[in-house]
Length: 451
Image 1 (tube, rainbow, N blue to C red):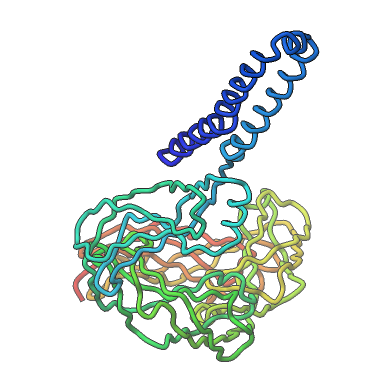
Image 2: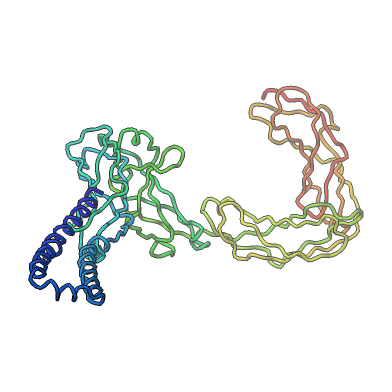
């Protein structure tokens, strides 16, 4: 603003000098000459000047001359423009090996004021940019002024902000263990799996203010699947993997990490296994009806996924809802992927269920087993009737007649039981899921003692 007022003052000063030199003084001299002339030729001149046309022409000439002079001088003030340069980077000058600076904006806005042509030249010519010199400042809070260096001195500029308060900390360092996270793993071919990621180092150095270093809980290399140059079985090297520091809440901590990037060796595999399908009917058929047969159009599939998950799975269970079923039906079933399984060779199957009339059959004197008894204990039935039970099997006659008693397993669940005598419910399971099993004896009495 001060420069603006100075220009306005200079403008009016120039106008006064101009008027004095080119208008006031010449007119005064002219008037004196006219006065002298009039004394000598008063009558003729009086008659000439007294004419309206002469007075009009003289007035117009003088007015035009004054207008031209003022217009030329005022162009300096009228031809003023302002333009904002947004997001100009700020450079801080200080010893980056010893100190950390916080509170300094990364970018500022610069308003340039001046003639349009000067602003255009300023935008085309390189400038040293916005900077702040922190050399010599010690740790603590400091109010500093930002400076903009521009070669064209004919322009005025204003920074937003022009002053900021910064905090200077002493830079400290610490050593942290390095782990990794795999990003966009779902984008990997579903038949492939990342078996191992080996980083080229196990530790890194973090630098920054002490209070930030104290919050760093972990440093991770972010391995992005989308950056892997090839996605095929084998080993592949991924270079310049970025590192990020996190606090205990998983938020990023702004500290310097040395080095800031690492190289990784990634092992890509394709674990798979052929497993049979196990069709499991759920719900109850209409009263008097039973399942005669369950047949799927495929008997096995190939599963892909994490090696540990593939190894644990020996069959793929497929549930179908038969609740209220009273006649034959074909189901279209979408296979669900168990945890750790990324792909299945066949996604959809068809299951045909045949329904028959229901009958029952009893299987007597089947021994009752105990399960989930804690280590160090033993169990004993209190009577012969508590040792063996009769199991009622309900289903299609054709299915029931093919069932062997050895495939029927009544049992009691003793999980959580200690020393003492108990009356425990009898549960029954069998290998054929087309029928239902239940014990005629609902509960048996047992004694648990220390083993």
